[in-house]
Length: 375
Ligand SMILES: C[S@@+](CC[C@H](N)C(=O)[O-])C[C@H]1O[C@@H](n2cnc3c(N)ncnc32)[C@H](O)[C@@H]1O
Image (cartoon, rainbow, N blue to C red; front, side, top):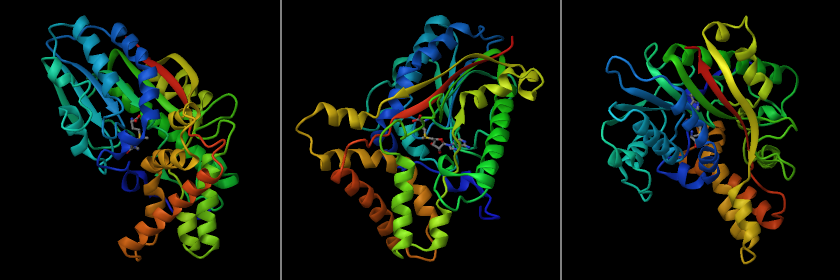
């Protein structure tokens, strides 16, 4: 474990911008769409708005809003049926580095994706955005009816250390793993306490987070080639070959933690925890795997070559991982050199997949949580 390298996640994380994220991240959209029934359950469960207040929903860690657009459309439609006369406010939150321009273009249909434009189809719906991280309270007390978050809260608020012999906590051990575990436990408590303050009594949270399931599976590790080990393999090879320095090798540490279902549920079940005391209760929790759509397409299309599969598959990894490797590079290098090294890294991954495609897949492993604030 290298000390001290506490790095605030807000300064280093971002999805690839310009629409790259939701265009290349079909699996994340599948995850949300498959679980949109949980949002409809929340619509049915929340109390009616009072005193002329609007119904407020929020998407925490939304990226460019493209992947949740269909689910939010369904939620707004269901709210409109249940509360025909009430206004609805949708707040999208992410980090300051997020591409909010693309988010608003997605909402207005100013992109190639013209579907699910709830602003066009429903009156009395308002969209807002907040560029402050979800580890702190973002909305006023008792103002939120439904909080939603998909595939975002595995980001820890700060990287507690660099992992010296891997790029991700799934490959960490000893003191580094302990530091990440502690950071993740503290963050989860803070996230829940912030949401507890924001929620109205009777309000709901629907959260689907990357995690480790009961069989030890996690993103890109469901029986085939381990994705994070593959990232590490190529990054280490570039260090061993002198393409990057030892410091650059070590600095590439994802500020993420994959919690187990037990870790997610603990503060909601322990009657002595501050989260329980703040009024949050677990409604349901389950884990689930959503298959990698790129591998499924490859399996279903005998005419697709291994190279074509690799070219379709690696960008989905790149859409969310690139900044970790790009930011690990020495800022003394000029921008073109850094871009070239990052391209080379993903080219190595693509070539490996093209040479031997079997087992390469980024299956999504999530823990799905429904949470209520006691009425
Ligand atoms: C993998 S993307 C998921 C985006 C979208 N929710 C989906 O499911 O497709 C993770 C998102 O979480 C955001 N994120 C990471 N840490 C965050 C934080 N502390 N507060 C708010 N958003 C955060 C990232 O910027 C990114 O947009």
